[in-house]
Length: 212
Ligand code: SF4
Image 1: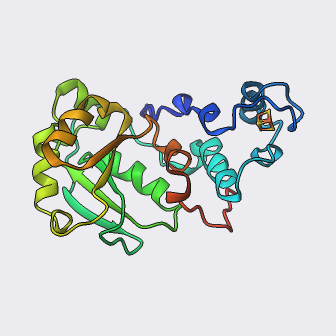
Image 2: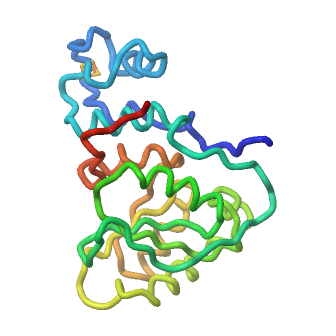
């Protein structure tokens, strides 16, 4: 089986460091600190400016190849469920993460969701079962479908947080989706393993994180 590309090489670690090149970690630049992290020569805790939660988020991203399930690189769509799914007792103040209805996408998303204590709503939108990257190529993930799926949920009633995160590959949908829904729409990372870093305090990693 040829494994699907989960875009682990697209994780932008540098964005989540202070960027001051202060040398307190022993490296001259934050960028070289990232290189050392990737080679396993330093750990995230060597930067004294990272919070405990951020250190754990770095660890998740650095070990994503162990955490995320391997899924096959198939062209064929694999449609799975659509609609709203609650994680960790979400309520009207909770962020919405938008995704597609590929069985493989949902499997990988479940893999990283196992590493948060935070509540989320997952909005699975019908894109014919294409993975999100392919859904953008085939134009099967559309603003109208996201908006319609959202409108069918309890989240459209009342005044909640009204903020959603789009997968990085769907960045081109952000503006029209904001216009259509009136929600704040942010564009997340290309790699799902970067999500804990991207969301910061909105993604609480368990303190007893054990990566084996
Ligand atoms: S200690 Fe942190 S902020 Fe300072 S150079 Fe190292 S990585 Fe960058």
